[in-house]
Figure 1 (cartoon, helix red, strand yellow):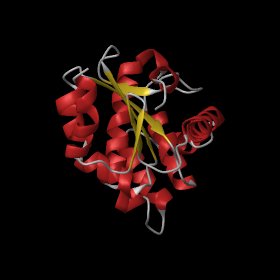
Figure 2 (cartoon, rainbow, N blue to C red):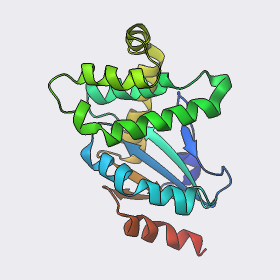
Figure 3 (cartoon, rainbow, N blue to C red):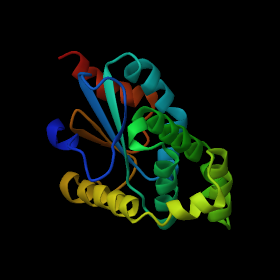
Amino acid sequence: IIAVADLIKPGPITDYTLGDDKAPIVVVEYASLTCPHCATFHTKTFDFLKKVYIDTGKVRFIFRDFPFDGVALAATMLARCGGASESEAIKGRDKYFAMVNTLFYRQATWAFGSDPEAELIKIAKEYGFTQESFDACLQRQEIYDGVLAVRQRAHETFRVDSTPTLFVNGVMYRGALTPAQIEAAIRPHLDK
């Protein structure tokens, strides 16, 4: 078990969170946008988690990028650029999660095709990117360095080596949990 205080300590870039900051349960997910198991979790289980636990104030959810390859890193950077400026954090968070959701649902079209960049540009344009802002985003060194620093800390400090890896109040779970499995992981913490 990892101390929740250590897990929620922010890294060098913005953590995107959902739910009440004072929720009794903290779920931290490390995911790669090109990971099929992560896509399965987000397309099959995440809506249940959000509706039953996040939206009801029982869970604070923190999503952290753990890109396994250059294509995942590019997609991560685009999702982060797609957000608004820091002064519009809520709007930025909503745009980030909307783009991440789209990337997971349409993963097969961009992550594994013959031209991932062309497919990513199509998705990015749906979120207001131009070719120029797309190119500029992928050159933003602070996002690149920040994402890799978060990934390195997860690996070295929390022993994350596969995705998705979820922590429920510090207890590690690996793999695409089903709604029943996420409920079984959360339930004991609600009864305390």
